[in-house]
Image 1 (cartoon, rainbow, N blue to C red):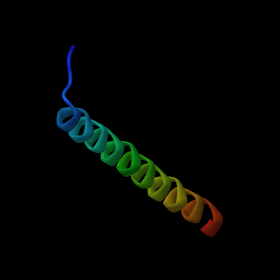
Image 2: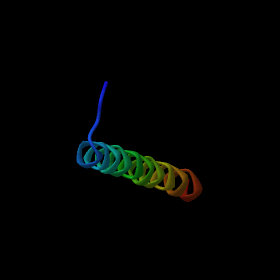
Image 3: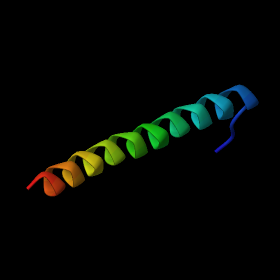
Length: 40
């Protein structure tokens, strides 16, 4: 599959945004779970 530079940059940015968003989303869930466990 051939990518031009612009297509590759767009794909990389899209992948990076999804990757970082997933990490932030998971870390917020984990932190809320840890808080609920510590509260009880």
